[in-house]
Length: 419
Length: 165
Image (cartoon, rainbow over all chains, first blue to last red; front, side, top):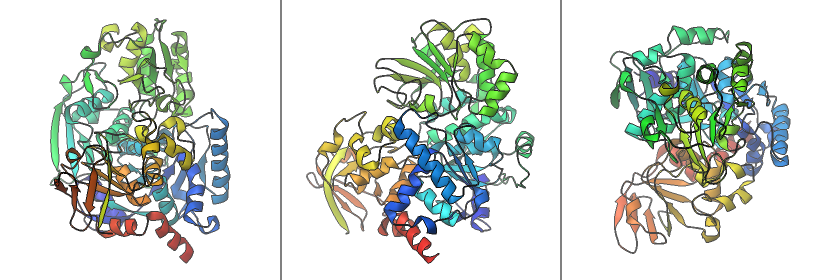
């Protein structure tokens, strides 16, 4: 069996599963971000009494308010109040209010994600956890209500696509460029209903930060799971954050794959996804010179130490172009604190960057909103029409290095040319 | 009901959840939110909807976020069927969970123009353009998924479980 088959078989109490099987699996962890506020109204609408509704296992359910932080309207503030009150009523043990940061980053930092586990989140980017060898996937709020009460959910065992990234990455080319390259070459539905296993020497050499970016964006390829093998880096990262035992899952030598692709990482250049689709990808050369109004490094996809460090390195001793608003938001307060301690934040601020608080806001149009006709280059996972504000604005997705380089020149720029 | 008919409402490929339910209005209750359905590409769509309309999309319908409001607004507008070439998986799950029947029929999207009458045979697995007679086939839902859908979605199932205690 491959990684996802092993995880789903174990979670379903079966010795083996095959693609196409429908199983009922026990959930190891469940997470809800802001969507938690929908829960009480969902229950009310369905005629389910709140006092009959309880969390199947308080150790396994986490709520993290992250999308609209801090609240920008009375309606949002009221919704957060609903979440807090309902969390108290349900006695949610792991309730993280607006403080610790973006849910997916907080989940991995606080040790709620362990190799070999099956995790559902009421957010599509739950695939992020694949970076730690956990099968994480997104579900809607009503299905989450079902999980919270019963601790189980139906799954179709997916086929798996293996992407092997060989060689090594050139300087200033990152995991973001790899995933954009795959989206451009194979399309954003290449992994529809399927799992991906990311393998090869490039993946082995990647930091956990870099893998989290790829696990995160696996959903942009349609994937149900975006899985990585657990290596020493994974085990060390997780062990530093939890006492809980875990059992990584790895593919057998004879594991079956629906499709296999090999990409030579050595030949990958910085990539840019043009508006308004993640698959509308060209090499940075084709995007060079496009004038930008805004640059962003933020979100559950980026905003980690490695992203902030490369931005600081590129901006060192220089200034953000006067025509550009450059927003950088650390993904969590843990990242934020570390970046302060390492002097990264002051370097960014001195260069003219505006630091935002950890939240989903810059990616989802709640902060740093774009006006009609404006252009933004963003280290975020999505560039859908209207996502950051006006539907008549354009979002170009790129790596943190390309975004920082572009913020310096005021136009989309190959990071290798300014470094 | 084994055969349903409705008016085809045509959409293209990669219709994402931000397009169906824009993030800026997502905090609104579904009764209000439905007025913004497809707003970035078709402002005022909700005014043109008749209960029983059927969405006909292309590839990767509903890609993007897990916000189930993007399925809830469709249901709220009285649309019970979405015919498409393929559907993003979370959107597919949300359809089952909320009681919207996803009809994944290869070759179906090209058979319809906006407003034409579509007929879906849920037993035989066929979608047909009533005007042209052209059709495409699909695999009808079965097993657990069909049970959930026939039961009105996942919440009625959950209600039974909570009432059992």
